[in-house]
Image (tube, rainbow, N blue to C red; front, side, top):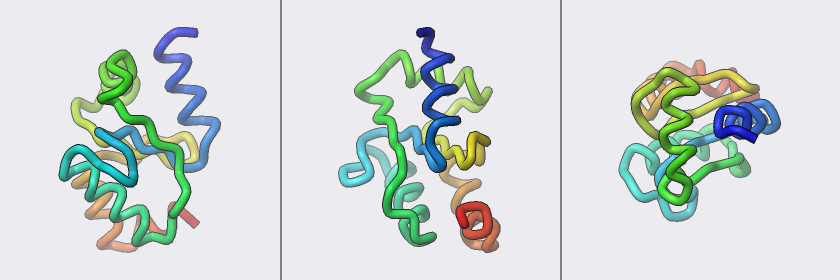
Length: 101
């Protein structure tokens, strides 16, 4: 299976997917920590996460998959939502909470 196929399977096979640096319990960058914090503030305790520091092929592959240059990247119901800043803005406006229900 190619990296792109693996990513597609992860994104479509899970309701909420976060590609991040580190893990939800031990984020390795502030942006990833903020994304996890926002998800938890929305009541999402369980979600599929991928530590791109442990999987370098996914780290580059996810940037190509979404045509988005940075990590973290959040996917909900198979759709790319955005990175840390977009996720935070959507949370503040209430849009993210609606998407996650």
